Image (cartoon, rainbow, N blue to C red; front, side, top):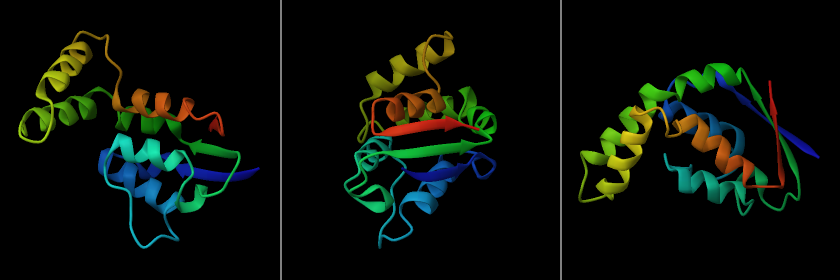
Length: 129
């Protein structure tokens, strides 16, 4: 089983999270992932990048607690607020509900959403380090 390692120390916000994903998974590609949870999900299916044609992989996420903090409530709030500021591009009702749930302590943070997406891929073994 091949192992890939995310360096949590390199993650301070959503942009740096995707920069780290691109470093780890897209180094051999002529393009990079955009800042999209859908793009993350698609990549994890293994159709391209370093995961292409891999049956099972181990994903070691070093300094995961730092990433949890960096992609926590403040970052998640800013993520939804940015969506609300672009009603022509995003479904603002979904963003408004997600932001309200986050503010009420019931909605997932960006970090938790990422973990949920990873967990949906049974070909990926996540090792929290």
